[in-house]
Image (cartoon, rainbow over all chains, first blue to last red; front, top):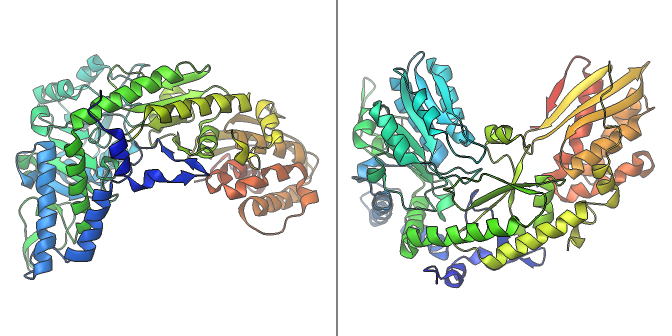
Length: 407
Length: 150
């Protein structure tokens, strides 16, 4: 008996009750973005209805309420990641902005000509392009960890990439295109033995497993709110305090300063040094509500339930002739990427939509992964705690039907 | 199960997807242009042999979804024997048919009418128009060898 009461969870997500093209919606595009429980929607709405004003510095009641909600959410994020201090929790727009911040602040102030950054073959474009931009600016170089046909990083090759010029490692905790959960604890140990800090892209992992930044000993961790059942446009950068303190500001503006004159500006303390301008106040509060929601269910329970879903889905699609799963790592999150012989992923996406099933078709912002498998695109079903085995059955029978139509 | 999609996926589209016409390379083609839709990874190379302003032969290679494969296959059929300006006029008709409510000369578009259904699927319009944008590039820019729809 699963510890996840899926019927109860589904009741918390208003969007799931609707029909698409007269069929019950089956939402299997969770790796792109997940749906929002009513508690998140209410938290945002209540902030605007009852408590909204600009935060910090305000002397009036509403400003105090919004500030309390905003800083309360920061504490929730701290606890969620098991960070040591709220000073280490920086609110950004999403994982993408978090990585850009690290590249432009930490990277630009510490990297130089011929220095090296290690990333991997399976990275999302958000964990490739900011580093390429940094390389253009500094003359540094990207080194790429290869992977096996199953979609697992080759750790021997990873280790052999380190040399005296290695300055940074940035790797996905979990791959969005393949579902692979990378052996990050081991990778961090290796990097630290060379005194190289590690950035973890937690966009996929954060909603699916417990993350303990202190146990992992990662130097930076980024994730997005919208994949964690929270609002879009808000995310988190965790950084070890000493590193964040050593870094120059990312953007200048209000809130990130202590004292400004035309001669000089004194920057604010952490975390405000990296939070220029009025932030997405209600969305941060919404993210806090999302964290309350998932921790209420328990990330261990969510992970166990989703593992069951993935195992079931994998078994079921293995009976479909001509279907090839892309990404078969031993350690995998609830992502099922696949191609069907004779049916292009885009056609799969459109046909499934016509029976109410939402999946993603495309390169999943991971073109190097598509090149590696020599496919133009894949179809991807990605599961969340509100999905069911019945929904997977419907997906599988729809796939069998569409093969008949195409062949 | 997929009755709702009959307007989009007509039998002609399945036929051209299964058995694309003019799916070959033209050696020494007078134009060869690659079209790429980075959004979905559709990629095709269009070959044209143009003699005295007339498209004597047209062919393609590449891979894409059923809509884009059928579209390029149908296109290579219909433009053969047309002058460059006739092909351009057809592109304009096709563009109107797939992207707007404007009037289309049904006789001129002929078999291409099977692709009119994409108009109701904004995410799929580019699949149908990739072939034609590639053709447009091939006709307008003698030197250019690739286009991207993004």
